Image 1 (cartoon, rainbow, N blue to C red):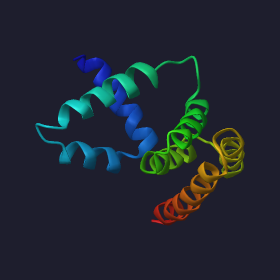
Image 2: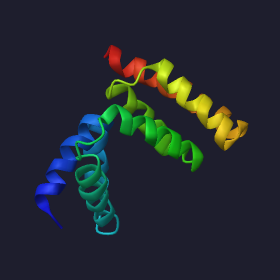
Image 3: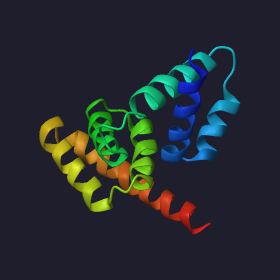
Length: 129
């Protein structure tokens, strides 16, 4: 594994998902799942998110659409918070989710809007601290 890419990815991952969340994930990792943590941090966050050809805001909007299409509500919730941290507005998130409803189906859109509302409420609470 590439420690430089891991460290680059770790910084990006913390900036998008929140340092507390990432540190908690790494602290909970054991011999079984630490290789997955390293793989995700190094390649997803370091090698891809670390590229400069797309801004983080655009990457976040792409992730929201893909996670909705894949029906991954846990990851969607995490990335809605990340999108907000990356400057995606709630209006832009709404527009992405409307696009999802048309291209992935109304049930996917309904679920995504539900997850977004829950995430907005939790995000607002955490920002008031």
